[in-house]
Image (cartoon, rainbow, N blue to C red):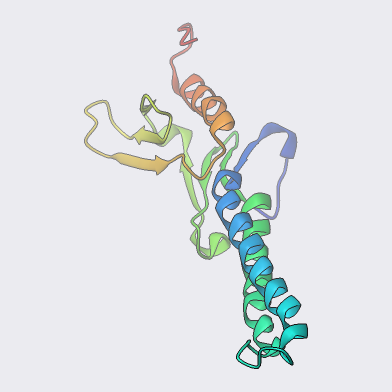
Length: 162
């Protein structure tokens, strides 16, 4: 497990799924609001017996806890890590098991689309093989930093891509 045994953490750049986590935080807030509303209306059941039982509030509240845990994990855990060895890519499901390390030596060059929503890592100059990575899980203000770091690392010495 390479990610757990970091030799020099100060030499790596971590990019989390914090851009994707915002949607989950909003979902958790909406579910919690629904649960609290169901609890609040329970005091009026003697006036209107057709109101739902307060126990039904547990369903959205438990779902809110689950969605908030996912959001916290997305905010905290890495999506891409740039290390001196290469780029570590962590998938959404089971990131520790599905982690992929792409060595810098395997890559010929990289490019980012004009909206900075996709990073393409090319294995050869003919652009016949490579990896497409979506950058939308990363916060928008961090995408340009990632693009600059990857392209700067892969550019030949003596060239200035700034």
